Image (cartoon, rainbow, N blue to C red; front, side):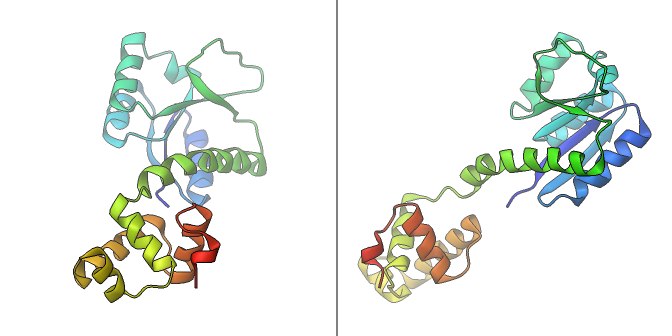
Length: 196
C-alpha cells in the first residue's frame, strides 16, 4: 500500500520530534516534512502534497485566507488536523479533526492509526484500479486458464498476457493465483461456481 503522508507544522521542537517518532512507527505512515513557520509550510505543501497537515494554532494564525487558498490549490487532497492543548478552543471550520497534544503515546498512536486507516480506501481505489483488459485477464486467471489459453482466447501474445498479470499483481499487491481468485470472487468479477 502507498504511504499516508504527513507534514507537521509547529514551533515546538519537542512536539515536532514526538509526533515524528510516533508517526514514523506506524505502518504506512510517513512524515515528509516538519516546519516551524508559514513560509516553509506553504513551500512544503506545494512540494510534498501530503495527505494530512498537522498544524498548531500559532502557525495557523500566521496564514491569511489568501495563503490558505494557495495551500488548498497546491494540494486539494490535504486535510488539516488541528493540534491543540486541552483548554484551547477553536472556531475554525477548516480542520478535518483535532488532535490534543496532551494525549499519551497509546492514545496518540490510536488517533493516527485511525487517520491512516481512513485514508486507505482512497489510496487503494486510485492505485489498484484495474483497466477493463486487466479485469478480463484476471477473470481468466481466476477460472484457472493458463497464459497460453488466455492469450488464445483474447487474441493476445503470451508476452502481453504476462505483462497484464504483472500489472494486476503490482496494482493489487496479490502475488498468488489463489489470492487473485479470491479477489475476483469478492469483487464480483467471477462467480464461485466458475472457479475450478
